[in-house]
Length: 145
Image (cartoon, rainbow, N blue to C red; front, side):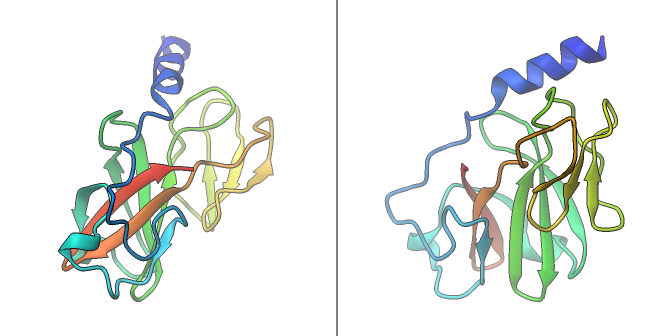
């Protein structure tokens, strides 16, 4: 059953909404500094209040369109990252970060929690990054990269 579920998740990857025409700071980079992005500069769909992501913490949300898991992080005050929670090996959902790593419960692939880079296989590709911008008190996800 888990294999079928993972396969279903893998099929939905890459269906994140495209950035809007008025892309703001941080679009497509995976980080945003929370400044200069007014309502007209917002990218993607609002997925969380900025205050819901604690400094040094993580918040799991669903990607607009696909519903795939995405982990929002705020490593430093005002800096946000968004990484896919879908393992690139078999499409399983990785566990929330612990000790600076995401671990896939299916085959133990490990990924760097800050960058998504593969630390241990069998996965060979990094976790996908999402563009993220802040507009007022809302965080918006852009396209997966």
